[in-house]
Length: 541
Ligand code: GLN
Image (cartoon, rainbow, N blue to C red; front, side):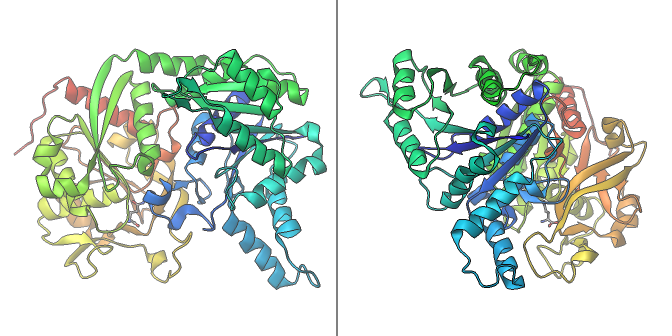
């Protein structure tokens, strides 16, 4: 019988529920259990695809093309669980499905209500993941206990033990134990209150994971255990990790969370082999090289907007035993102050994906600088499109070259709308999305990095390289290093006459893991290390 773990959060948002859930998933997998993961988000958007990164951080894309919450990125980086459309549901999606059923007449004669219709729909999407191939389903509930929006989700998970047996369900509640400087002590009251709200709903947590900046002493833990009605050993400290998020699973394991879960479910499993994770931390703590990489985008001040990119750069660093210092730079600042001034001293440049015209000229300027100075460069999606614009304008002599996303009447539309997008009017879930195969040129940098010519990568775009300019740009020296297997869509461009200039239409960052860095990120870091070491490169004139 598949077991269910529900992860809720209390007191404040941004406690790291996603990381904690992913870490628990990783620990259970490392003990040989087959785990599935899922996130339920209380907001009304059907998916985060139409939200600004300011609102929601990055949109994480899965192989099947679903646009999901960034916590799913943690799940994929920490575990080997296969995520699909069923791994992320929102209130909007749940209601949409119930309302569609109502219109089809599936509830004929009935008043459709939050309880039981909405809650039944939620229970179904959770139970759907429980199958013969799954030992444990971990379901994370977004938001904070006490929010109006999350109530139907909490009510639904309260009911699941009645259907599948309380012994097959476990509730893990993540809470904050703040340190009050004036009082000189940790305060447990917010935790008591948030568990109080859960218990009013009818959920008694089995484990409390307490985020704290200072160590909990026995008195604190005893107090929390008593007031929240959980065994002392199930009050688990999760101290702030200043060094790396990859410490989280190890710290949870040292607090025996995997043991507590197995015991609660009456499962036995071999001891965890966490050597790969110890190795990650060893490499992070003992780097042999150091590089600084500039990430030039629109959301420099917002860490979550490029979450997977920053993570993938770290992975490249882990792989190359290199400390990667990442510096986000606002592309609009480059427009004002110039690439020369803002990019001097960096060992590589990355330009990520994006939408909308703001900051685009800054990205083009940054890429021009990298191209002319032999600065290793990785362009992703809009970053690739900007690389083509720079090359067209400044190397191929196509003055005024642009993407029709930004200039519909450009004289040289080197980037244009995908054919399949021409009749698309709805904005939600309608881009070219998800895993698509690509074929690489054997003599390209990318093929060398991947070690193969056939790859599959995740996409999220409406615009593409305009094939009408292919001949002209190739003649000017741009290498079409990868295309869709039928050759119709350009997926990768490179500059052979440059230490490392690779720009891709897809999002490699979604497939990078700390234990298996994405080849293009490892490649960028390797080139950055070479640059840092001062290997000379002089542009041919
Ligand atoms: N805005 C561009 C497009 O739609 C790039 C998208 C992206 O960078 N994800 O094609």
